[in-house]
Length: 84
Image (cartoon, rainbow, N blue to C red; front, side, top):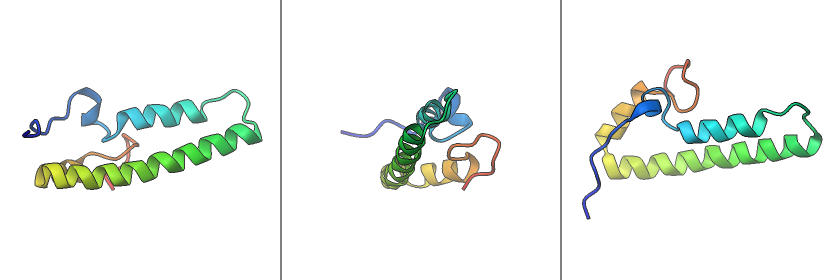
């Protein structure tokens, strides 16, 4: 089956991984940061970052130069930073 064409709808124009950004915000946004929650937030954030690296490797293999150009112009997680 042929993959659909590469598209960047809505939030994907601002960050490459808006769903992961939402999860990271949810994990770190807490009124009281306990040691247990800090450990949870840190480990899940690290897990997400590793997942992003693996996912982007697959996306480059699937979409090639289209994804490389997208990666050059859109930041990974922080909308106000330059792309990595």
